[in-house]
Image 1: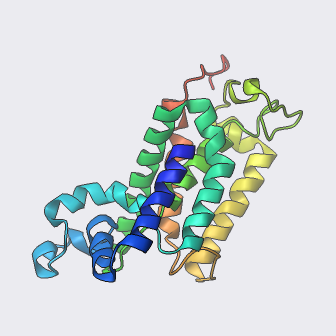
Image 2: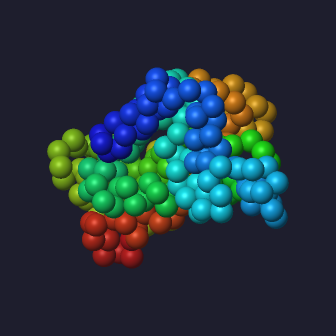
Length: 230
């Protein structure tokens, strides 16, 4: 998780300090997620850098780009809070793979709502939303790092996770998710500004990443499930 945070910071620092504006725009168009790219003949029509290949790699590469230092700081902060717990449980390889899958899921849902738009989407928010969702599957459990009768040693991160229905019935999880979805809908639908976001909020991408992280948690979790069907 620490290496990923340093990579995000390094990419933005290089973009900010080393690249002229023309190059920064080219990187944004080639590696940001641009819904207009999927229109027929859009690559040739708009002369988009990256060509046809960007239709594939931009589902992931957009998550490594950020629009401002504040945008980057907020994302890294949330990744430290929630992603560190998931990384501690999953290990580096599983953590990175889950984050990538959630980034792709976020881009896919964003594309479904914004197909053909010429505004690029950037930022690691969808991946971090997936990390948040994955964390809810175990951190609020009894004996988990944020649960009742919590503990902070390694065993807190190695307890068998609850199944999805049990997790959703946990009042702490229910409250967290109610606030999380409520804020995203508020920021997105009502266009309320949020610290760290330079433009409109890609709330659909956040939701896509969160749902993927919550639903796919068990596929990545190395800890054996509970015997009660979890």
